[in-house]
Length: 239
Figure (cartoon, one colour):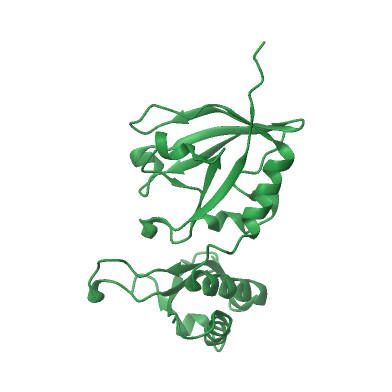
């Protein structure tokens, strides 16, 4: 019979990745008993993105049920198919959450140990991390508020479109001004597919500032988008 493992403590830490162009949102790194266990076995890997923590609790990346679930818990800035990824199977058994059956498809074959967590502590930490805004920079807050306003308004649906993304755009360090866009928010949407017609995609490249309150910036950007048919005021993708 397998000896039970010691009960570990999960802490979720938000971090803006160095290569943020792969995903502009913060990654949510799992620390187990205070140790970043992913770093040792998948050093190039990025943890699960903060953008996946906005829906209902059952949709969060580290949510568990009695049914085992294989999760891609870290992947490189390119793709898992290119340079490999780190996977773990997680499930709940009674008052325990279990992470085991690790798989590393990168060139590094090492994997973390199996872990057991107290289910109450584990689930409380997921709730805390999902509500945590302390990591946000002003551009993140503007993007979050703008997304909430646009999603709640139903504005794009009014024009036969679907909002697909609202994300921060950070200034790239050590890059000449002419090769990078100023800090801001990117918004993309597409037309609803109709029979026989190719749905067109659009995007806005919006700019933010450090001098103006974030709430005011989000309101102004939303007002700009919602002043007219967005298909007239946004850029057509591919043009």
